[in-house]
Image (cartoon, rainbow, N blue to C red; front, side, top):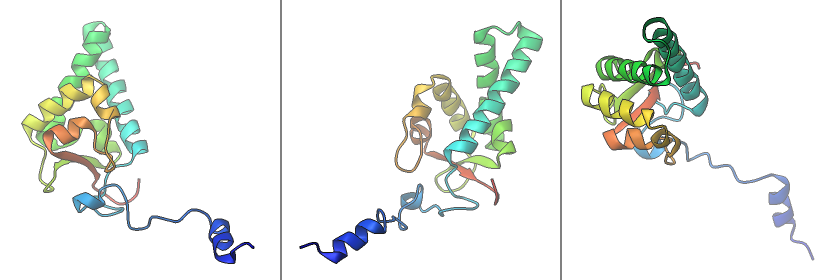
Length: 148
């Protein structure tokens, strides 16, 4: 005989995990300011930064692959190191912060930029959506405004 409780739970779908979200273990809210940046805005930000680096590299350095990469790295080092965000991050209201919420700082800007340029570190991330580049520097990419 079929137990109705097991059939009912099957019809209700998989159990929801309302108590778990990226950043919860880090003390970050589920959404809104301070919450972990999601994949969509991250990809949008890097596409904007890469496009800007490409335009600058074509305009001033002949547009070679290495010139695009160097302009991209310079943008990341300077902007993230000094302001906590690149132009792409700013468009999507994101900021790189230390785990305590303070600015990332120049050293984090340099190391994160070099690791992002290697491509692989950002593709390997943990349950809190922190890539190896963020884990290496004790940083996290978060939303800084409501919306997006």
